[in-house]
Length: 399
Image (cartoon, rainbow, N blue to C red):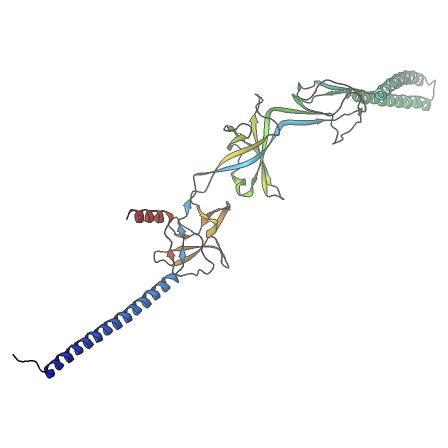
């Protein structure tokens, strides 16, 4: 049996080493290619992500159409149909009062009596003066008649007859003046009786027996206040934007805080037909029947109007508005995800929403909150809607 020589083993070891080196070179080459490829792919992905991130993401919606009518709630002032502050027309002391607050009175009903001793004495004096003036006038007339008869027989001179005639005319004038003075004092005497000017309810009594009454209108001291509340006047002030919709005959509903859940139909009976120059508002008057006495004068109320609106107008959020040098604008996104600016005309401002009458169509995709850096023709990405996000999250949870 022969043994292998050392020379034959040496070539075999060398071949194994060469194969190992070859494998190592291949592995290094593969790793190098993989590293370069990975870096290139990462750089490409990073560039794509950077390019993607450079495109702004915007939220959008479509303009909403106007409703068929708009509910307008306005605070109202409720007043009596007729309301009168009763003042004294003569001076004296209050002798008695016959009606207190809450009393229902008829027109001409006695509210109070005033004791006027000075007026009483003046009236008596004037009546006596009237009797004297009447007697003097009658005597002067009879004297004139006699002197005219004497003048016909030339028993007196024409001058004397004319003097008697003139004296009679003066006495008749004095009699007429005395009669007018008596009438004046009788009118003052009648003012001792304070009466109701119309059917109504006494809502104020600001005097008492023995109080000193001064003739004339003192705004701080009316004797009584009488209100006719069989019908109520309801006043509202409408802004200039709604002024043209406030037409006589327009239906409305009144709501009272004290009667929750109930509404009472009414309508516009008249308007001021002119705007207040200070507030730019229109005063509107409505009427509400109150024969049953369900409503109180001075109560807080709200009036609801159903105002017709422009069916062609659109509503957009106020956040979509852009203030540029060209005027009021909004930004939309076209089918190529490109930004387009539109100049719009705003009819009314509701706070969070705006009514647009020109510059937009119902099919436009509106950017709801455009950044200041947004430019015409820029590319944007539309953010998924909340509904889409919810759907995606549900699908993810199922998987």
